[in-house]
Image (tube, rainbow, N blue to C red; front, side):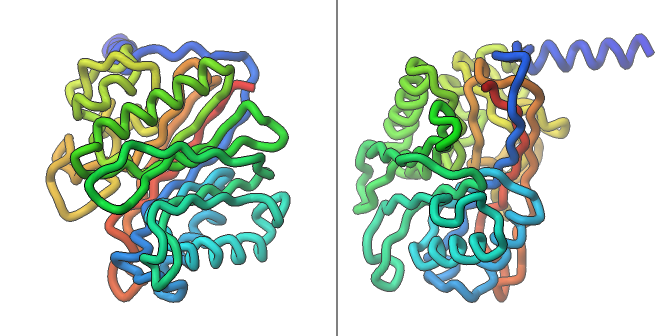
Length: 294
């Protein structure tokens, strides 16, 4: 028993302690997926990706959903199907879309989206530094109507040369939200692994593990308590070995600033569905549960 207690204490010190921002909080379930709407699904709403996404959102009882690499046709169809199931409280006000490239999806836009079980307020879209492609990547955020100080954000950071500049812009925006007294949850494809130095300014300085050290930030990634790879989490891609702990890379992340955590959190990545005449995406779905301050 002493040895077990010692291990638990050591693990707690390793991951860093979290002081709840409030004794009272609200627990939310988050669901995030890079759907490869164009490259692998060619803007189709009938490959199985759309139906699989809707089924998974319902099965996981998600409150907030973030989609990246989604075509507008697919966004509208997921919107229609979720409304038909009675998932949102207000079927006329539960989703937002930001285009990062026009006309690529058989004449329609390609971008990122937020869905919320709870009604959404006015969305904002922050343009990120331009990379060498024609895509205009953005940080899309929307507050809740009932809780306007709580924002849900979606992002898809470039894998190209301006990756660091875009990550810095996202972080600066999140920090401004915090300075304004807002609680922000951001999810999406960051095209950076937890162990990379460019994310040290994100990750909580109290988080130091063999797979993620040298951190100097204020954010917790909701999979950083993963028992199999502490500080790093579970792979969100497949068919490569570039990640920590002998697994594929993790580049899909969900961040919350530590001072807005009001309880425990956890995350899990799901195996890629093979029901789209093969894999439905080259990314796994990332799900999480988190208690946020009020």
